[in-house]
Length: 183
Image 1: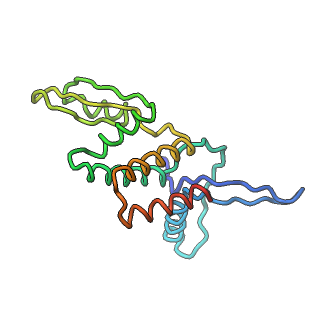
Image 2: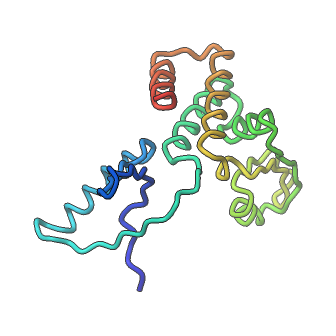
């Protein structure tokens, strides 16, 4: 039986002086995961040494979970501001504006779980009957690189500003985002 994964982190290897040992630095987008990992390791170790297996491989330059979380927080704010939209609808609109294709399909209601599994983002637009609905689907941002996701989040912040969403929380999120993004 496979053992449960404790953590998945991305880190930077910084070479040491010639012939010396370098060091690893956890990527900023994984700091919460690193904290959670240490807490779980401490709980499992109970003050005793604990054997763990570490696998190191080159990182795909994928968007981070932290970027994804921020995106959904912002899209939820956008939806609340519109009042008659879901965060998923806002997401699909923003994907369209970014040039990422979304499509409208007429499908059996029973097929929704399968479509959600395959297409990632599914927003029910209209229920035509008990058995059939119209959905808007897209592949979403799961294949975005960090830079593409950063650009997408910038677009969302721009849209929120255009909409007049400028509460203290959103302003702070923007400042934190810029600080993290720009270093």
